[in-house]
Every structure is written in C-alpha cells, then in structure tokens.
Length: 413
Image 1 (cartoon, rainbow, N blue to C red):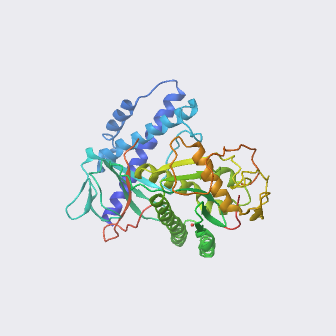
Image 2 (cartoon, rainbow, N blue to C red; image 1 turned 30 degrees about the vertical axis):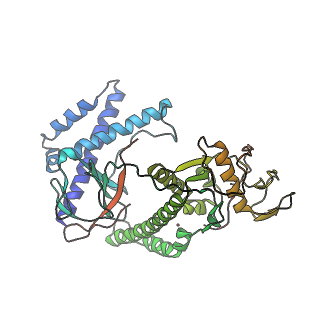
Image 3 (cartoon, helix red, strand yellow; image 1 turned 180 degrees about the vertical axis):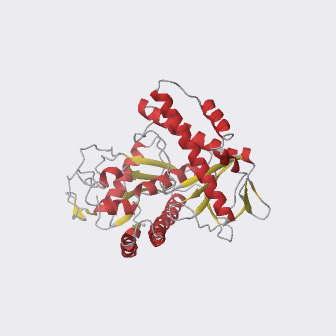
C-alpha cells in the first residue's frame, strides 16, 4: 500500500502541474502574450517554494518536467493539425486532466536515474523498488519508462528501447487478405481465419456487471467495486482480442514475403448498423500490427485502394460483374468459374497489390494474374522512433496491487 500511495501521489502531482501550465497558457493567450516552455519550467520551480505547492517536492522532479513536456507536445500536435502539417484526424486543443480519468500515467527518463535492479525489480525515484512481472526481456538499456494505471486498477511499466530490425528468412510466398465479419480474414492461398467475436461472447457477463453497477448508489463504496468489475470485464475482452491478433499477424508475417490488405474505412463502417460487430472485429488494430511487423522483420506490406472492386471482379478472366448484395456468398462468372465471394476478393487483392507494388515479389506458382490493372469504381455502400518493448506487468504484492498491461455477426463486404 505504501508504493501504491506513492504512485497515486506522483499521478496527482503530474496532473496538477499539467493543469497549472495549461491554465497559464490559456491565460497568456487571452491577454495576447506568449509564454515559452522555459517560462513554464521557471514557474514550476517557483511554485514548489510556495506553501500552496510545496508538496510537489515530494515526487521526482523529472515526473513534473515530463508533464510539461506532454503539454508542449499536445500543443505542437494541435497547431500542426490546424495548419495542415499533421495528417490524419483533426487534433483538438489540450484539455484539463481529471483525477477521475480512466488512465493515469507518469514518465521517468534517464535523468531520474530509474534502474532495473539485479533482483529484476524496477527502482523508481521516491517510490522504491517495485516488483515486476516481466512479459519479455529488455533487449537494451531503456531510455525511459512510463508507469500507467488503467481504468481497471492495473499498473503497467512501458519501456522505450532501441532495437535493430532483424529480417526473417526469405519466403517464396505472398498473400492477399480479405477482411470480414463472418470470417475474420480469408487469405488468397485458401486459408480462412474464423471470427472469434470476443465481445459478443462476453456480452452476457458484461450486461450483468453493468446492470449491477446501475443499481448502486452514486458515491458509495459498493458502486466503486461494481465499476471495477465492469472495467475488468472489458479489459479481459480487450486483452484477449489483442493477444489473438498478435498471434495471427505474426503467423501471416512469418509465412509470407509480401502481404496485401484492402484499405478499409473503418470509421465509416462503424457508423452503420453493423457498428458493434465492426468494432469487435478490430480490423484497424490487425492491419496496424501487420504493417509494424512487416517493417520490423523485412517483409513487404501494402494497402490496396479501398475503391478497388475486389468483390465484383472475376479473379480468372477479370470480368467486372457488378454489385452484389451481402447475402450473395458465391457467384458464377460468364467464363463459367464459380467463386466464393471472400476467396475471390482475396485473390483480387493479391493481384492488385502486385500490380501497384514498386518491388513485387515473385511467386513460385500462383493462378492469379499480376498483370491485370486495378479498376476504380464508386463506393457500393457496403462496406523513425525507438521501438517499445511492449508493456511489462508490474507484479502484485504487499506494497503495490498491480496487474498486467494495456475478438461479430453477419459478413460485411
């Protein structure tokens, strides 16, 4: 409990420093003044000498400085998004942090002199030696460690280390992947990965936990316990899905020299009647894992244009047969070939990926022509940073109660 209180104190101090700096920036903006990062750092030093903020000296100064760095990064991302320099979704301006936020985090850099002891404990300044349940060995000395507390009350230590890219042995195969809901993925080589539907399978338990929470009086200790049960149930679903996707993506990257995937608009699909199933499938997480592991292990990864009509093309003769309702799972082309909808789409994705790839990988044998150009059409209405070693699990014990760190229905498309 002593280390748990020390961590809570560090979370709180970092949050206060972040909020004070955000208030100072907003105040300066309202009066037309500019306030630099150095000014904020000086203000922090001065505030630690005042009676109102003297308790900030009870935690590591590096934690407080990193809170200022987080605010500066948030503002840089916001201004880059507004000016159009940052790609992707628009970034909102920084907001005040709350002690009720689902996620609390602090970061220690080398300046804080954190260390991994000979007894495999994590030594944190002004907190002590914390027992850790390691998920893997650290390949090199970490440059920083972030301690995270998630909404279910679990603590994690995430290390930043520098690793070298290690290429896997060359493979003579490549694959196109068609993602869906009935089957999570169908590969062009005929492999079919069933959709585990982790959220759907856990819905009954989640519903019971949520109903129990809704009956508790707000502010009561029992409501806090019920909220924790709901959070842990959701965390179990999330962890199981992530673990399963890591295993599937690793298998695909290990067996294929090149991987081609359709560039799905997940946000758009998540606004349809199949939203829950789309979110449960986790396509974006899966494709991100494929991309990251391809870069790390020397594989070729490419996304095929989302408007490419993979479902409408015949993978044998290239005939464009037009739109098909979702309930049509098999169809016969004019050339006489009968296609499974998903398998045919995967073969077309493979062919399109080969055609668009600047460095195509030759296959030993494949029946799909790589010369057919990708065909555009209107939507049919259906649908260089240091690497992190992952998140190690801080081990539960007498000092800190810690736990370990942060898988759909009808076929779509």
